[in-house]
Length: 98
Image (tube, rainbow, N blue to C red; front, side, top):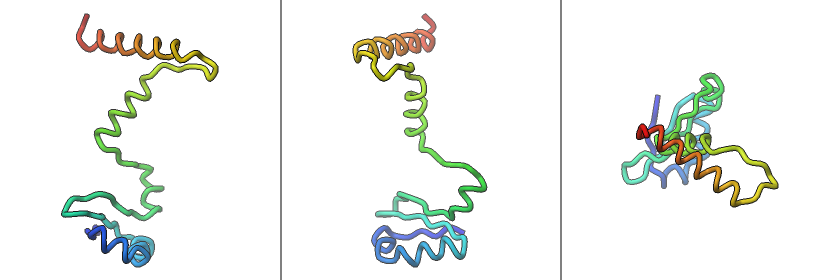
């Protein structure tokens, strides 16, 4: 069962909400001005599913970070930038078929 709670109320009653999550297994959504901001779920649920939800923006950022070229710790910054630009150019060529 999911319960929606206002952010102010969540701040005031955090201990009670944590007890509901831990002991009753409830999921609690924290909202501000009607917009959902966060979700508190039982830790055991996270361990069972092993699933972490990412927003589309977070997924895009993670994909971009994973596509960056590898570099060594002592490498010159200009060389790193060249690698990044080269990788971006390759990606653009592949995307636009040139």
